[in-house]
Image (tube, rainbow, N blue to C red; front, side, top):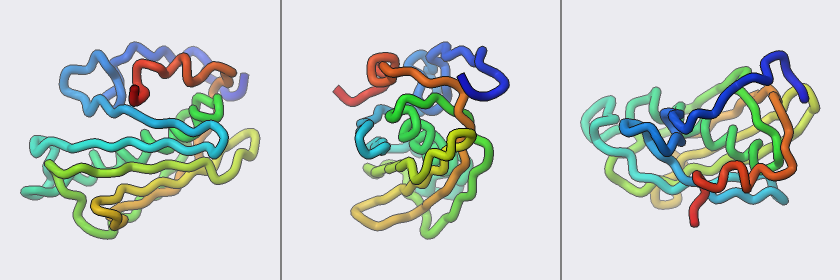
Length: 151
């Protein structure tokens, strides 16, 4: 195991992906362990607006952060975010089907470099890069995450 705190507990109440959180986003993912990628297609409800018809910047950041963590998880590494840099290119609309994509760029052992985008109709609206800190590794991450994967 890597990292200082290996006692993190997943109680299915995560705001982004928790299946037990009644007010969360309840994201579902398609993971590709061979390529270190994750994809989530989602519609963000208007009660997550910043401005009318536009996803709040904090929710946009949450989507990018979560997809990068899941990209890392696809390779068996459960992580926490050490740092994140977000770029807002264009407003991200609520009530529209968004494609959120994350990728592991490099595993440096003590840190994992990742990138992510949010797209609507093929146009990138927001992007991010993050440094993730590995907490633990498992060989069966797809099994562990099965409730949160697209069936």
